[in-house]
Image (cartoon, rainbow, N blue to C red; front, top):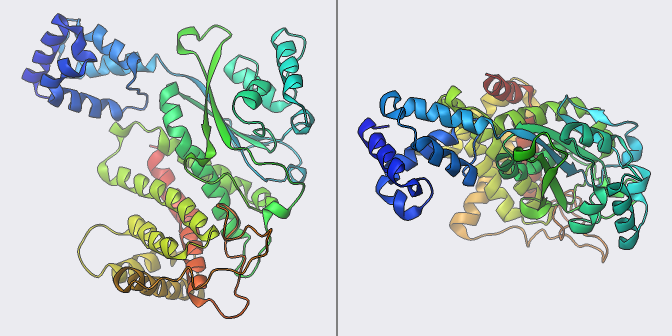
Amino acid sequence: MDNKRFLEYLKAGQNDERVAYSHDSMEPFKDVINELYNDIDKLKYHTFDGRFQDILVKLLKDTKYEVCGYGAFLNDIEDALRELVVDNLILIPINFLNSEKIKNDISFDEDVKLFLPVKEDLEKIDKNKLRIIQEKKRNGKLKSNGELARYFESVIKFPLDKEHIKLAKDWHIFNYPILSIHIQNIDLYVENESSKIAEAIYAFLRMIDFNLYYSYWVTNHGLQDGQWRYPASTYVVYYRDYLNKNETNCSYYGSSLRFGFSNILDIDTDCFVKNKELFGKLVSTYLKACFLDLKLFNNAELNKINRWKNAISFYNTVYELASIEKYDSCSLIICATLESLFLNNEGRNKQERLLEEVKEFISDFCDEEKIANYLKALKNLYKMRNKIIHEGIGYEFMYKAQCGLYDRQGSTLGYKPFKYAGSFHWCEEIYDIKYCIKLIGEILLSEKMLNNISSIVMK
């Protein structure tokens, strides 16, 4: 920060506090404001709402920074923002996970836990009865049952009002197991990251199922495993009120699962249980990557983290496009996903460079036959991509499945893709897409990739 410009901004703030929040007053100092906001954005704890502006108003009036300078000013902002840190709980319903096959609640680590639904959540209760139950709980005559309710109260210091969430947000939110994620940070920052976290959770579950259980031929569907209940469409973020940390009060933020991905989660429960340690490690690593003190990392490290997170989001998009048989779009995004993971913008011969990078990466954990199959599928996919882009030749209508009236394959986002294997002819191009989706999962689930990202975020 240029010291002269900072002192001018400081002087203006002492004369007119509106330079901290008014667009017109900030306009002469937008270079200072942009640099300040960029520095704040790198902090582990930050928010840009009115609370941050209140901090600016207060600190700009302090004349000590005329001597101490911008560094001291930024440090004091960081200390003030740290005072806004509260306990947050993200509750994410894991739709269609068969709780009967999961014997007990699962603790992945001290902050990430899976809670099974209790009987009262699965009973059909009308809205009037829910309101009566809610009122009795408020009056202390009833308490919410289950380990989730007890854990919630131990963290948030306030009873979990399930009835309120059912009535106000989502009637079906507790139909299935709930993944609870505890994060200590500023509430608005957690809210902003929560949609990415929820999407990543579903992406991890899908890729584990697709790669570690769903073989080249298997078409078993998690939706057919156990009793059908309506899927939840909402996840919730609860947090302590930062102004009343010692009082019995909390706030919450509810958002739609469809904001970033389908709420249909068509996976095999047995596969999830067998690979719960891998799932826990993936989630823990992703959470650390969401709340970093960016000052501690160089650009190369941040670039690796961003590529990894971007690929996880792309995976959900690819999976869902394949689930509704949008094969042309799917093939384009598969190429973009792998390019974003392995390539820089370095000129020509993109396909050759990508094939070489992928081969080098997977050679540590794939045998020669599997490597050859992956590379063959990727080469074929690039041919398909080039025909789509340069020749206008599409494939998705050529291979649309002939489905029965009640078969939602090909029409509903989130259903396990590639159930249709070709009744009348061999869909070679579609199998190439399927194999390339497995390639992306192979890379993202690999110990090599996970250890690489973990070694960075654990700094």
